[in-house]
Image 1 (spheres, helix red, strand yellow):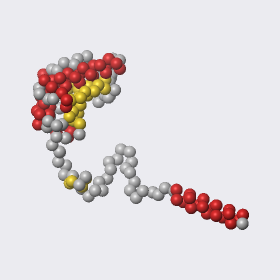
Image 2 (tube, one colour):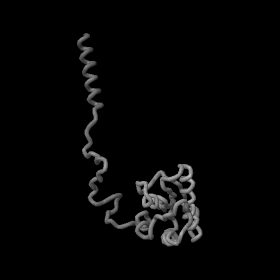
Image 3 (cartoon, helix red, strand yellow):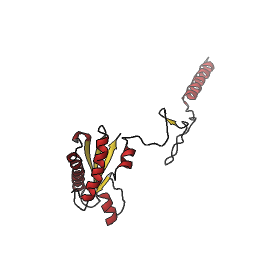
Image 4 (cartoon, one colour):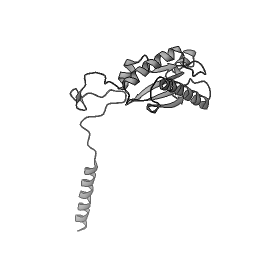
Length: 174
C-alpha cells in the first residue's frame, strides 16, 4: 500500500512538472537593436504599407515644415528672424490641420545647474508657444515641457554641441 501511494505521488509530481514547463514560441522576438521582420505580407493594421506619409502625422509635419527645431543663443530665449521663419512654417502646417495637438519641448546645454536649465528650457518652450499662438494657433492645442539639459542631441563639451542643444522642438502628438 505504501508503494502504491509513493507511485501515485511520483506520477502526480511528474505530470504537474510537465504541465508547467514552458514551450518555445514559434517565432522568436528580434534581438535588441534588430528591426522586426515583416511577416504581415505587406499589410499592417488592415492597410497596405506603401511608404506614403499620412497627412497630419508627425512624419508629415517633419517633411512639410522648414524644421521642427528652433535654436537659441547662450542664456537666451528670444525668437530671432531664423526662428520666426521656422515657426511661421509650423503655423501654416498647424492651420492646415486644426485638430492636431503639439508639445513644444524646451532644452538647454549642459552648462549651468539643473534648476537653471529647467527654467531656461521652460522659457524657450513658452517663447515658441507664444509665437505660434500670436500667429493664430489655438493655445489649447499646444503644451510645453522643459527637459533642461537632460536630453541633449549633441554629446560633447564644445561650442558646436552646446549650440545644437539650446533648442525648442515642436513634436506632433499622434
